[in-house]
Length: 338
Image (cartoon, rainbow, N blue to C red; front, side):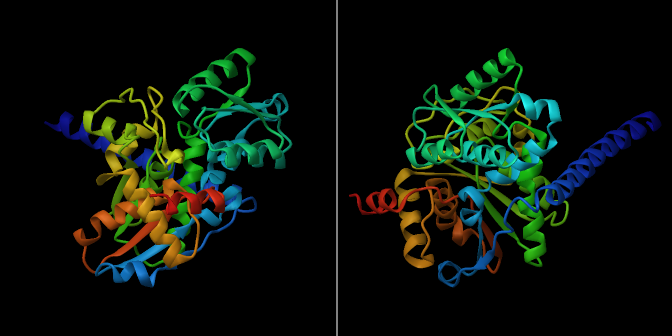
């Protein structure tokens, strides 16, 4: 019995050590990248608060440099590279926002960059990537196919591969958003985060629960691309093909062995899937009442709030507006379509 007690305490110690290590990694990342990113605003929404008996706050990563949270992980990863790795250049894969962030960071740090994008990638995001000087290579029908090809070529060419989510430095960088949340508000009871590969929600949830252990973390995805959420329910990473979705920023599957998968399983408290119509209506509602254009991935989080808003009462709810990379013409065409 004494041996068993010691063994249990040992594993508790290991888990605590890992949590503290991640906490320190995120805190360090917030210091490393602070001169390269914006500290985005957390705003109270009177309109969305009136829709339920809760206080609703939006974290505006759509106003971040390059228009999404991805710049956090990109800079943290690129700043960690050795001088030799920087001189040789890098390869990454993305549906757009990660690629745009890496293109921007590599341009600022004078690192040559090749970015693989799936055929579904947004034209506005790809054009922005090209303007920043990165080479764009189209491959595959979703981000996972592009990732596999990019990783294969990075091994062949002996170049550093910058994963969109399956990387400790990237995940720690995304977690700096939680550092800001804790500085900006005394407490949140609920946080709603859109989920693709899980880098953002892993970084936020693992860090934020070290300060607010009772916070409810809600992960959400489009029904047309539910790879992480369906994998969580199955207890293993599933090979799921995405259908077309307005939420291109969360579209695609998961790499086998992704470090984000066990974190999502442990730290996400609720999962929600939303339809394309729900995403569209959420984007329109946000535009009409908050006067900001947002992309589909951010619409997923708002649609989730609208779906579950009456599940909570007198709570402080934070919603991550993860990106705004959609041009006005395309946005207005979308919300005005029948």
